[in-house]
Amino acid sequence: MTGRTVHLGLSALALAGLAFAFSRLVGAHVEPTALGQLAAGYIRLSPEELSVPNVVTGILLAYRSFDTLGEVAVLYMVAASLGPLLQPMDNPVASETPRLSENAGEIIHSGHFALLPLIGVFGAYVILFGHLSAGGGFQGGAIIATGIEFYMIARVASAINVKAFSALESGVGVLFVAVGVFGLVFAGGFLDPRFLPAGELGHFVSGGAIPLVSLLLGIKVAAELSVVLERFRG
Amino acid sequence: MIELVASFLMFIGSVFVFSAALGLLRMPDPISRLQTGTKATTLGAGLILSGLAVLHPERAVQYVLIIAFVFISNPISSHALARAGLKTGRTEGDVPEGERPEERAQ
Image 1 (cartoon, helix red, strand yellow):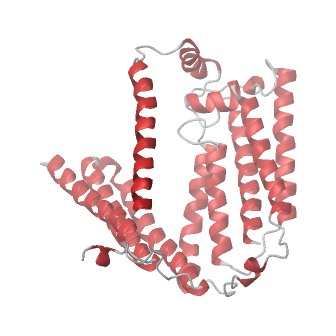
Image 2: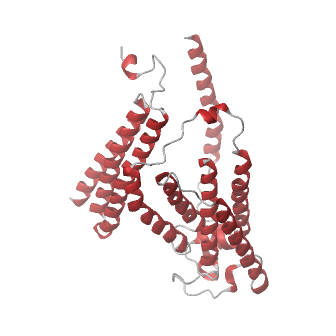
Image 3: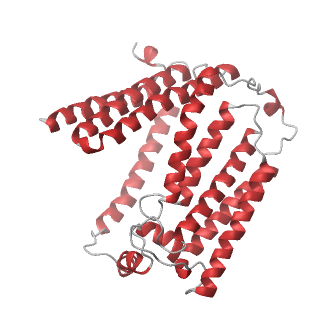
């Protein structure tokens, strides 16, 4: 009983401390009435300069493309380091976990025929229309990877070819950097998408190299996440 | 009138989703938690999306597609979870003695 009282008291103290810290933050906050200079610049330039109506994609794949390259590199390192990290050591707990049977069951097996095409189409849509509406390579790649995970669950005996997926994502990564170098040579700088014609605002083929970069990112993220999921499957 | 019907549908839907959240917190074992989480959210999401479809009839087809997707995917995913739990023998409740709702009421 006393342990519980002490616990409650400490929790109340922590909450009071948090309330104090955040009340000062909230008190100092002034609602901005106009966009900052940088934000206003992005919102003006993204449709004008890149002919991309989705400003977020314009920032992620043009103005801050180098950051995106870094994020992809982080994801690559995660996928690469999970292999050695999840290597089964002489761990008695792991070997005691019973393996699931080779059959996923009728409901899941039938369900994956109905759902996989839907997931695939949605993922492809999110990747390909990233420059026009909400979405992009990262998000679409993650959706495709959920489809691949569903495939792994529905077909327990199936083996994902980790080497092929790794080769695919490495190749796509090289292409991504190649697109960046093209931007350096033919346009304003590294990863500048304007070396391809800008096209008309709002059209499917528009925005220079942004749809291409988005597609490469989607393939790369999907392959990387699939490798991560396959590693966890063990 | 249309707004009233839509609001009513969405309100009932959110009651179902709320009951699902409550069930997740209060149910004693994984299988019970799964069934509250699945049934109530399937119906709740269906009702909320139907309310939205009544409110925006021009996008009704999209909402019906989303409802169909939720109605297929939600039971399948819960079934997969429950089946994996059953096969690995992890269906025991993890609420400690004395903390269960029926014991707390006494």
